[in-house]
Image (cartoon, rainbow, N blue to C red):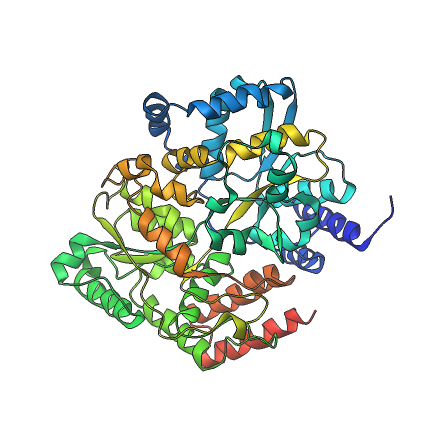
Length: 502
């Protein structure tokens, strides 16, 4: 095989991840190798299959039959590939677990197609698809790609819009690619004018608060960043003696979660990680204001917050330790469920308006500043699949309006990809307080996706910049390792520029 630069990069990704798992490379060395090869290993929180609502699955199967046109399509069109076997490789996500639970009865039994769905950690997903794409083996028919990988693998997949045009005999009934929310397609599934696949989940920042505490303390949902900070102070002063703090962060030093929190506050004060000239701007006036805001907000959090990643944040808020929070939307169903200490007490509100907002054209590396920090991923059909038609039938079913709505009901709060999901009566029925798999946060989540979504910079060095530079230095700042916010910001900017230049 001719060894092109693209081939060498993908092989380097695979070797770096294999070396890390075998103990031959440190995490820093692995991330550096990935950065050189042009991919990131950063994503939003993944709460996995445990977040799937199995009682809701059973009820949904009983009360909501599959549309007859879907069954007819799967029987008549999918049935043409009876006996075929396709391979899917993904990480463990709640939406994926929901589709995995549905496929045996609703897809495999009807089509006769076997779907071998392998669930592995995210780094192993990247390793597997990298070696597969480099060698063009077709070992996996459907890939799962984090948004940060789109540029690296855009030529290794088939554009679903083109497939709908070129394979009309395989077109799923009323599939309607335009039903996917445009911001998700643009920021998760596109590179240039190409679409890599179909969006499949999107953790995104959302504002939640305890209605009981707001009512008791006479607070209103914050409409500005200053009001949000003031609310945190009032709650903390009144309730911290009872173990309830103004808010809860995800501020673990060296963890990607800390960088996620930071970007929301910096973006919300008119800053960005980079400016259009490619220089780190976290130490400019707006960046420092955002960092100072984060440090002030930290005063109204439990002291243990510097050890919390997104899992620690989720648990602390579920236990009732926070009065309000701006964080991942997919947490809401777990917080509002019957086993939560705050079940039925939470409400959502629009994100507070940014104090200032830097236009995306003035930021760098396709960064889009906004408070609603997002992560996301896609399901993609491999260009090298040996069973492409059968895999295309499955991919359409898995990302169709009906299946995605079912996944949203039983798989938590990160799988609302289509407008039709938000409009579906089954979603409306689940907008109830304190129940398993509530969807009453969906309207707020939709508003954030459509109007307030923030996207991180897209550059090859971003994984090591975000985690090994920004998150590490922020950890020093939040634990008193710098004399001032400006000193910390200057150090971060210098180190980021050095890393970006490598």
